[in-house]
Length: 244
Image (tube, rainbow, N blue to C red):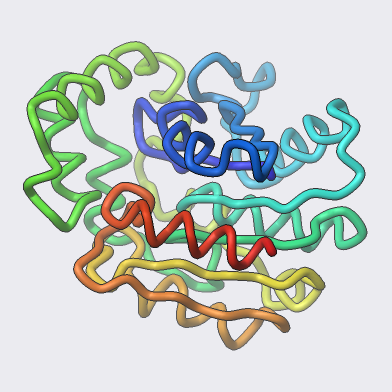
């Protein structure tokens, strides 16, 4: 299973998916790379990233690993990449899960996504970002803020090139056309938080129901942008049931 992280500053494959990989250990082989421009994966020379780059890199990674078929799970930006990968490689992608996903045709730039992409490094920026990502304020602990601030500082130079203003163009770049979405042959599971302010349910997941042929949607109440953090047990059971 290929796990693709989202686009927040300081995000890495390990940071986003280590708890999921641990929960699924022994049942699924999990691959959770840093996407280009994040963590230890540099952008190609002269590139600002974007859906095509991230999709091609994901496909190339799985080719290099010799994976002839695999499922793909993506969060937020990674959800759009997961759907694009499923459309491009119908003979390889067996199932796709898009969590709090971007990628819906015509989706707007939410104020919270705009603020998230523009969050400054440091504890204040980290606390503000986590407050936008998570519905439950009790999860925005000092330890979580410190860890995010450290990750934001480590990746600030690379991230500065990814989503400069005006930022609506980056949402548009991640949008998939109705034709592309209709080409997806794998079963698709959409997972979303009812209180997601970054990619609101009505603007992000619900429109995809009109375009993806074999699709189902699971909505978590009392949940923001990161179901894997706010409802980890149920989220992991949901993944296992769908993959089975």
